Length: 457
Image (cartoon, rainbow, N blue to C red; front, top):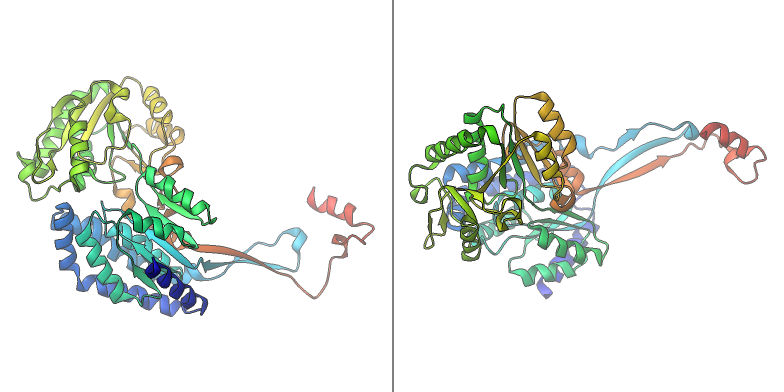
């Protein structure tokens, strides 16, 4: 597409002029982004309702408010992050000075998903702009109303040579990936992440991949079950379960399984009433294809709670099931990404740890326990991107923690200073003295090898 090539060419020219390097300019562009969002907040809330059925509280909390906070945090710390950092001098380098200079990559591509279409677009864009890059943003075609508002916001906040939105379906993403970018930031499924990485590899373009996976939620026998149930229900059923870090399945100690399921049912009633399908606080599934897939999953075992659905509104009630074939059930073979919650039980914590560790590394893990030894065992022996002890989701909401996956759940991380780092190359520089010279390093030195052996041994 000539349009894409033209935008990228203009952005490369602007980046090459040095216009992105000014810290004052970066700060002003972040301020402009904040103003553009604030001016369209009501429109954005409406778009999130139309695309995903998000209530105003959920939309503000999980999409808009978190981005306001991220912008404020980045503005507060940007000048310090951007300064060259001195490093220690090695004994072999006496007289020299070493330092690290963060520099922008150049022109970056951001491909964002539909489930948190605003947050997961603006979060990476904040990092890209703060680090001094130009950016082309490709929002999801499955959340068209939000994508349209994003396009308005970006056009208002930035000149197109700094940041621009390109809309379209998979063919547009394919065309974008054929271009030569300096970095690709992708948020989405592991399946598509492989395609993005393969395309980027052809041009040796570095990637940051924020993917997903089956994130476990372990509830040990000593957990506060009532509190755990509320926090688990919040994490699982926010956005109708369409959250990359939602608890994907519940792994509970057999001694407390029955009581925990009862508390989960109570928490669901408390959050969404007796008829969740009619609740204004409960979202809908993004498309018919995803809805039909989730309905099949909801029938893949013994029903413990929920199961009701309405095809006309694409709503599926919060559903608890006991998989008919345990770990081998279809619902346990892929990320659910919806309000279906399989419940498995374990006898000993070691059993739970072994089963989870034997599978692909998840994006998140949640553990509910009051036993420090249980906490230590899980955190040390299970690899996962990030997570919480005695909570769910909330690790994503702090700019002080990096957010990202490991293994099949992702490559790289961002948020706060980690966003600046994600979009910056750390250029290392050694400034050598001219006041004297060490002759022993040269081939002409007769005692050079002996000296080096003493210094380096």
